[in-house]
Every structure is written in C-alpha cells, then in structure tokens.
Amino acid sequence: MRLSAEELLEKFSNSTAHPFEVRKIAMMIFDETSSKIYEMSSSERKLLEAAALLHDIGYYVDCKNHNKHSQKLVLEYGLDGFTKRETELAACICRYHRGSLPDKEKHEIYSDFDKKERKIVKRLGGILRLADGLDRAHLSLIKKVKINYDEKYNIAEFLITPNTPDYYPDLTSAIRKRDLFEIGFKTQSVLKFDDYTQI
Image (cartoon, rainbow, N blue to C red; front, side, top):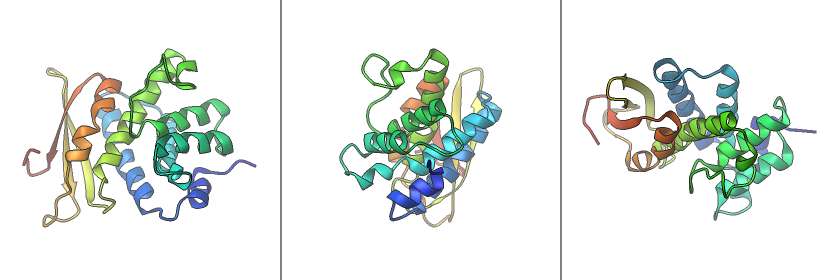
C-alpha cells in the first residue's frame, strides 16, 4: 500500500518544521513564478508540494548524499495519489534540491524522461532548491516571497519579507542555490529584502 507524502514524511522524519516551511516557501515561489514568468499547471504544483515535504527524508538513511536517498525512498514506497511516472518526477525533484544539477547523460531516471518532463524537473527542482536555501537555518524566518519580473531584461527580482524586521535570514545559501531556477526558467535572478536592501 502506497503512502501519501504526509505519511511518508511522518514515517521517515523526526521533525516536520523544516519540510513544512520549505513547502510554504516553494508554494509562494511557484505561484509568483507561474503568474509572472511561466505559467505552470495545478498538477505541477501538486508534484512540487509533495517533493518539498519529502526532500530531506533521505536523512533517515544517511546524512551523506541524503538527497539521493530521498529519491530512492520515494521510488521505493511510491506516492499515493500519483502515477508511477509522477512519482518518478517527484523523486527526481527531491534529488535536485541540493548537490549536482540534472544531467541527462549521467543520471538514471532523469535520462529516461522526455524533453518536456526534464523541463518540469528543472523548473520545479529549481524552485525547491531555492526554497530550501531560504530556510537554510531551519528557523522559519520567511513571511512572504514576491517576484517582480522584468521581461525586457529577463530578470526575476525576488523580494523577501522576513517574519520580523529585527531578524533577517541569511540569503547566502539561497543565492548559491538559485542556479537551477535560472536554468529551468531561462532567466537571471536577484534576491533582495523587501526594503530593497540588496544582498
């Protein structure tokens, strides 16, 4: 019997605070991106939501390469409410939340996807990677993420609103992890706090 994403998370994770925070941030980025840069479907949103919850379950196996272990666990247990192909997509999205970028020449499963599916993995993986970077400290410091998109210069400006004006999150990890988002959506990006203090 296959488990839901929530049930898998409960089975393999001691703490759900970070996965739920990453899901929250990922959904904000998805909605902003879909409305301002590239329209995506509700099924893609559902895929991202599941992957966001499950991206770190691989820690149950080992800290080293936990992203690959997350992928394997999702594939092994399956996902209730998702087809086999959708489960494979979600598993790959989990894998690419950290570490190496997707490589169709070297990476199993990803290499079996068609061009459209590989684009989905890059786009949703890019959003997840960025969302994970925004909660790098696992402190749930993000209140809101808004995107201003400059179509002329093809730049996505992320405006980050912290939960409190007294304590701003460190954006270093998110800046480092925006690479796959830029590849997936073929855009440049800038991350700023909403008071326009650029980082």
